[in-house]
Length: 382
Image (cartoon, rainbow, N blue to C red; front, side, top):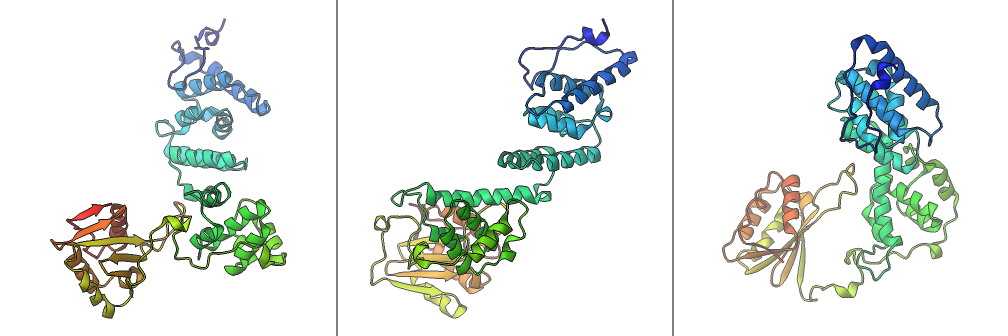
């Protein structure tokens, strides 16, 4: 019996947080040990997918890690097998942060592994590839396919609010609202059209295509899916407006439905839009009022890789008046900032907000040179 036969392996259900029971090796038997590892590797590579053996791969990983045999195996192929067997902890032990191999070599193996995983194409592999990027310290931005699929997921989420909800549901979002959400974002509009096309909602897709002045060129940037073929199909489709969605006439109504559940401003309430320095002084009427409502609006960040333009408007409501302030136009206005400080710090005023704490965080990010958002002593969340 060889010394390898005498090694005592724990053959019960393997727990990645435990190690095999082992006997100390004899350096004189290193050649025999290398032969054993290579034999396991070659055998498992030849096996068809679905027939590869976890115990053998666990044994291989243990031997390679314990006796530093990384240079004797094809690390990428071994890690791919481990990935197929969902033995992720073993991958991290071979090429993760605690692996003893050189960082440059580790990074090279990790990148090749992720590239090969992405080559398998199913949706689940993109999530797995992103996890590998995070665990192995590889920037996900190096793999446009992962980012593209994550953007698809964001579009799927919003479209799901239209397809899987009833108009009476609080979570329901009409298709025209979703289209408006992606306004000015050709990439997301193209992905929305792809999703509609796959659900045979081609006329709705054609309407979006026409209203947003898209072309086949907008679909050529994608690496995943048959986007150009979809674009050509939609481009050739004859538009029938009667079969398209019926957009709401007033896009300033609440996104949620039904509308009857929302309060509206009294008809005699003064509503004033402030977009220039000359009109800023009109806000003076709010100074010292007992209660002042405040809110801000910005387009949500659709995904991690979606760059928004920041807060667009600041809304201020007094007893008889409402002001809508264009922060894109006035975010550098010292006159506006000084007046807002005066309004927000007045000892007689209570500032009423709904989730305004998150708005303050966004204001600090988008308007770093303004001071009014730094100190609001009498802020009350309602």
